[in-house]
Each structure stands twice: as C-alpha cells, then as structure tokens.
Image (tube, rainbow, N blue to C red; front, side, top):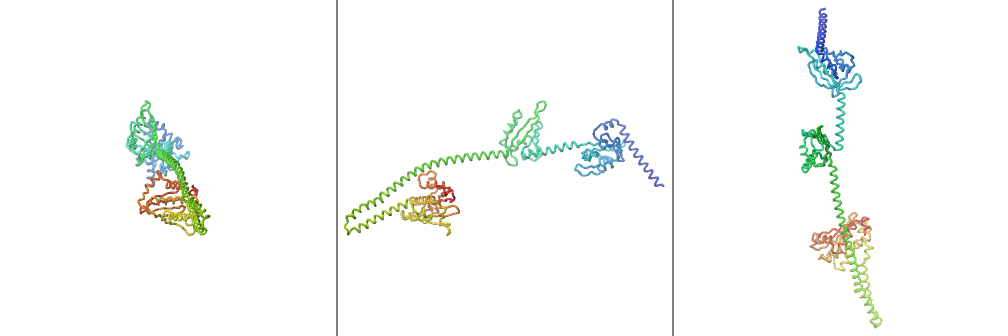
Length: 539
C-alpha cells in the first residue's frame, strides 16, 4: 500500500510539474503579445516545445506543413519517428538528433539542414532548422523554440545553377573559350575554370591585371596593355596575342565588353579568352607550305628553263655531231674504201694486157685488194651498228667493246659480272629492251673513249651487276689525280657533248650517274638503271 501511494504521489508530482512548466511557457508567451503576433505572421514554421518533449504551440505555417489543424500539441519523438528525415548527405537522421530535442538539453542549433519526405505529397523537401532553449527568469529551461525554413526551391535553384555552371564549363572546355571579369576599382580579376586552364594557372589562384600581364608573352605585353588602355577610352578590344603557359608559347584571342554604372562611370570589364594555338599553328604550317611550294615552283621553273636551254644546246650539238660523223664517214669512204676500189679498177686493165705468166700474180694482188675492201666495209658496218647489239646480251656487248678498244687503241678492258645465276641469261638481257642496249653501248663506249683521252692509263675495268630490279654498269680506270667535283661542275655548266648527253639520258630514265674517285685516284663512273616499265620505255 505504501509503494502504491508513493507511485501515485510521484505521478501527481510529475503531472503538477508538467502543468507548471506549460503554465510558465504560456505565461512567457502571453507576456509578449507582440512576439506572438510576429510569430503568427512569418512564413517560416515556428514550433514551441515543452520539457515533456511535446510541441505545445505552432504558428499557422507549421500547422499547414503537417496538416495539424489548429493545435500544435504533438509528441516530438512520435512526430520525428513518423517522418522520414535524412541528413544532407542522404543518410537517415536519428530521432535523438532532432534540433528541438537537442535544444531542450541546452544546445543552440543554427541553420541545420535536413531533408524530409512531405507527409502530404510524399516529395522530398529541404529544410533549414534553428532551435534554442527557452528559459525562465531563474535560467531554468522550460521549453524550446524552433524556426524551420523550407529551402526546397532555393536548393533547386542552386542545383540548376550548379548544373548550368557545369554545362558552361563543359561548353567552354569544348570550345576552348574561357570567360573573365575585371573589377577596375578593386583590381580583382575573376576567371572561369577554362580561363585558368588556358593560361596554365592553378584554379582559384587570386588574379589581377598585373598578374595577367605577367603571363602575356614579353614581346606582346606592350601591345596588349596599349590595346586595353585604348579600350578604357572607348575603343574596341578584340586582339590576338601570345602567352607563356606551362613553359610553352600559346596563342589566344581576347574580346572585352565594358560595363558602366547609372552615372556612366566605368565599373568593370567582362570578356572571353579563346585558345587559338591550333589555328595559329595551322596558319604557320600553311604559310611555310606556301613558301616551300613557291620555292619549289621557282626551282622547278628554273630547272625547266635550264633543261630547255640545255636541250636547245644539245640539239645544236647533235646536229654538229651528226655533221662530224658524216664528215668522218665521208673521209673514211674516200681515204680507205674508195682508194681501194680505185686500185682495183686500175689493176683490171693490167690483167687484160698482162703476160699469161704474170696473170696469177695480178689476180692474187687483185684478190688482196678486194679482201681489204671487204674488211674496211665490215669494220665500218661494225662501228656504225655492231650486230652484237641486236643479238647479244649486255655482257656480249661489253666484251665486244673490250676487244674493239684493244684492237683499235690498245686499251686493256677487263669485263666482270656480279649477281649472275646459271638459270638466266648472264645479264638478264631478256629484261633489257633493244633501245636501252643501244644507249648503254654508246655510253660505255663514250666512257672508255674518255679513259683513252684523259686518264693517262691504258687499263680499265667494266663491271656489270644486277640488284633486284636495277642494273648497274661501272667503268673505272687505273689513272690518278681524278677530281669528281670538277667533273660535277662541268655537268652543271656543260661544255662537252658526251658525258652531258649520258647524264641527260639517265635523268630521263629516272636512272642515276655516280661519279667518284677510286682508292688509287682513278676515275669511276657508275650508271644505275631501273628495269621497270617506265625506265624500259623511256627513249
């Protein structure tokens, strides 16, 4: 009975305490009617709680938020448990972290953000909660007051602004265009993320006009500063200049728009920066290409003019050579063959009148003269067009020239071949057209003539070799003191016919003529001729 009485008395005391605290809270609020009227008029939610963890009073905005009718008498813990409340990071917020409950323990909470799911619509709402304890004149906590502001629209605007800023940054990065603003009075330069990237400066680094000029290429700083000062006087600011970013030179285009206050005083400048390095590099490459192209055109034009001049001179020399050859043949026919035929004619009457005993001797002499005529005619035929050119291989042609020069001039010519297999003609003659064999015959003959005339030796070597799709013939002598540069200079300003003619024909066939000295100081001329269709068909 005693324990029961104590429990009843304790419950009565608790109830009396609760009623006393509620009465004191009501008295505090009633003492300030202006405060009550102000709380009722504001748009934010206002909640008053007692020490029994119950909302005992709420303004109309709070009642509408939770459809509580005209009373705010709600258990705080039950209301918090019924609601889905989340921290700003999206994790669930425990009931004990509720700002009104923490305020009853003496804490002051300012602008704590939380997310709740609206009981009316089920949508997520963002709120900002501030709570503080309410004390009586003795400093005892008799309740708490909480102000809740719905910041959902603000969050949506902030998110839209963040997304817009992100889209703008992406667009600037894609277009390589940054933006900037210069506050003239404060000398504060604000850059976008892309502008920092373009100038090679860590994002967030404080900037001003002088800092910007320090990044401009030293050779362009005066130009940029002069243009900016002119822009402040009303002129257009749309320039291209160089900067030094990350240790390398880059190009930018800058365009500015000036802003004024209502009194016409200049406040700031807003502008864009575009990275035009790629465009400038393309323009520079195009300029160099045009210069190179113009130089090549001029070079080819000069070469064509020189070739035309050389060909005209070559045509004249060909006519002169033809005339000399005709004259030589005429002299050969007159001095040799015609004289022999005249001797035959003079001996014919002697045969008729001769003593029968002398007839055999006259016939023998006549036969010798006729043999000499035949030999002279045959030599002339071989010299003009040896049959070996039509029917022999290149090796046969070279060996014929070796024998002819030995017999005619006493020049010893050693013929060698390289890279020859047993299963094909010794020099691949099946791949060498007749007109090319004629040219090589004439070229080697001209080179051997030069050995006889200029080398000071009567020994020479001719080497024929085959490498893949090319043919090479090398003519060298055992002389000394040969100067390849002097011969090259003569080919640039030709005065003779033979070697220049060889060089011209080789160029027309896309072939090469290499001129060098042997280790002993003799001359070495190497012709390298491609054996494809184009070279084979060149005439």
